Length: 463
Image (cartoon, rainbow, N blue to C red):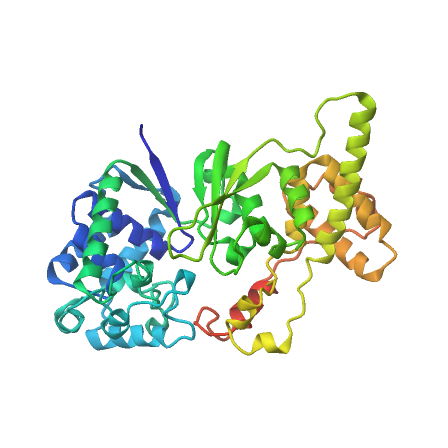
């Protein structure tokens, strides 16, 4: 049957590259698509094909009805294509930009810990012939992120795509054999691309834009967004995008967990029993997916089911008792959620290197009071009553009054809760909330790559 795939990325440069790759693949230009994806330098033919596609995108011309750009994303994608066409870096400047990106701590480590090709590190080309290509080829400007002003810090691809095949059995990653595998894989991708139609989008999907909410997808692949945004933020934000009977796929690469149970114990609220209760309350069921050979990535398929917070019809006294027991459980869980929304202290030894916290399984702060409010909203009115009871019972403690104020702010800010907030007892006990917004103009470039776990960009995000 017909298959329509929506490819979305918050970065418009990634979305623009997706447009070019798909157009080239659907026209049978698999070698040009492979070089665009993997190499920092393009040969003459591939450079001409890429330039042709960039010019068409910049002018808003589409000669392939199977690759469409969502209306709200067209301006940003055209801007990126125009910027790459106007890029005037010479070969030396381009190589300096790549070297600056490779110098960042941690560069060269791909998913699962496999090392990128040393040939790519040396010349920016997968397979042999890199030295010749770097000398006589054209710079692949689509690897530059045009959202950053300083080009020396804008080189987005610092790992080298070779890590995607680095653990293939019996292949030397700098050999003709490795290159032939890469070519074969792109030929398969081209054949698959010809059988589907694509919609390219560039929005922040975790903000649940109306365009994604209005239609349900049979499958939504969130990649490893949960590693950075938190599992519950991803499950709650993307739930409206998944059709009944559909699946939400998540990958977890920055973890040492080998099973779904271990992952649930490592994610907020760090309690397997509470996780299972919460998942049933909002209607998610986790199904482990077999990992690919040699890749240390945990994959999970989340299926939508009916929420089980409200018990099924039964004898009156049994239903009433089950309802009371479930609410008591939910009250205990909400207490955990609220307390564990605050960041855990990090021991000094975990600050020694960037990898130390990941190796030790440190729980990075990825959830806030807003996550609690979204979770309660997904679980229904009975959960809101449990939230009210938890905060009211603990109201005599000063820290809880601060927490109650945060809850009230989130209830007011999130659409649909404005009328419900005054009905909550803890909300009536607090003074009125006045919403104030302001803009902060940092002196330094927060997007500049820096190593370590306490970089300024993360601090500003948490603030």
